[in-house]
Length: 480
Image (tube, rainbow, N blue to C red):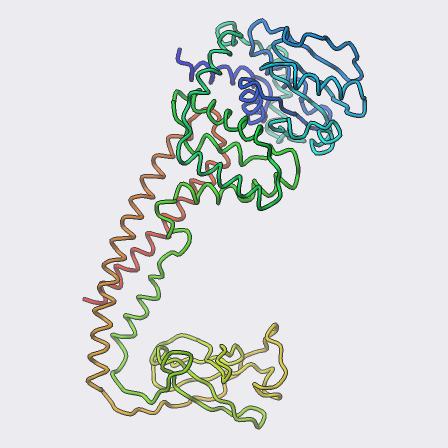
């Protein structure tokens, strides 16, 4: 039996008869194997202590030190124990608080598990050990209806749970595994994600000690090791994006931003698909307008660094100039013109409707005060038709305009061809990434909810990129 198969069966045995606790057991197992102290919390009856007992049962013939609330007889030699459990920990009890602090320093690599029904930011801070606990594991407050019915139907499963001798881990194996885990290499993606996560923590004032970073990274290595790899990959880090961070605000900040952080790392070679996707619709509209508009020469002036047509409208007895960019001529889209202050005038709406006559509508709220009157843009009234104003043609079918349009069409053709090549490369890279990641879903310890979310977003990016490529193909068809 391979190590991966053995650990898979061991996790199933640990989870036997305990519904909807798989993620908690996996995290607790990783922390136990790597000798990291961790905290389990949940309401009374949520299975905290049962889960702790299951985890230490994975160690063959383990000698366990189990401390209950107000228990005073704490041994001097902790190295004699293979695991230490503090059940229903109460830091207000000075003896318990002192015992936990002693265990943290004197246990060597023995797993240390603390359970309580209070949130970690309360308990761990009162005990002055918040920075020394590697992760916190929250148990669900309730079961789904299906899980509850299954539990009631098969109550004996919890009592009959046994870890077979062939699956249990001997202290010698544990020591050997930890030696091999330390040899696992951190991949560039893993380091990139951890680096981005550290930046996030600094930005959001989330303190993470160097000791904790090293401990969490060792757990990342352990995931790779148990999956039969000598190098980590990004999926090994996904548990870092779950609520393990001991404080509610830290959990909220990290779990919200972690998927985007991972996406930015795994798509680092094609950042444009995230930061600045190509606007294929704009190119299509530009080509369509160039092909279907006239070659007339209009009277324009340069305004806001582009050729504009000038109109004057009178509202509330006040004549006001408007400047309409020539690029909208003979198109069929609504737009806002510039006002005399070189700002986009949101209270006026224009449309050429494919002609050279500018159709103008105004916000009903300015009809009585004019465009220069005191007016807030935060609320807009109903737009009313105001006028349709012609554009003065200096020359019809101007050969110079025709030559300019031909040159622009050739530039658009080159741009479309170049972008189609780029988008095709993006599609291939996204497809390869999706398929490569897909295999990781079956890995041990893969955080499935987060994994599926990231895969779904990669698929969405692929679909959006496909739409861009198809629009570029439509543009090239136009240019034929």
